[in-house]
Image 1: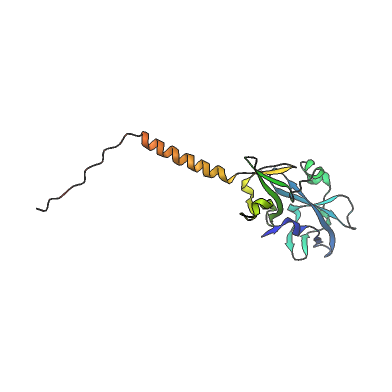
Image 2: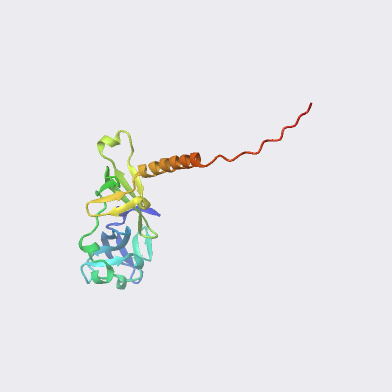
Length: 195
């Protein structure tokens, strides 16, 4: 199921062992290279370590009452969770980030981020375009396959014009190649004289 990442913040983390809430999600830790959600930072009175994290691999289920985990034993600390500690110390905040294409043209800012709740992979970026572009175009929906680079300042996406230009140049090249080939003789069609 696809959901906005905002919908999974400030939701309870429930323990199957005790049947109670053990924490609440507060921040998302995202790997900028893969756009994969690594974990959720947590807060709550029952936490023994601060900060504490819930790795997405330890989530048993997402239900209408929140994230379900086996027990509080699955909660981890920073050293156990993040392979790249920089992902936590300098968290990637996609909402509001500027989006440009690979030609440097500004496309707008990220309005919301859509993730797959089964894989915890970011799948789509909803981009709000500047006012002057809004008169002719609607907001953009960018698939993760179009994302080329993610930095703290902006997201670079593949330009739609690249494919159009590539298609035009390949069509033009095919025509030039066809003109260079020697003409091949065609067999004459058999004509029958009925007279």
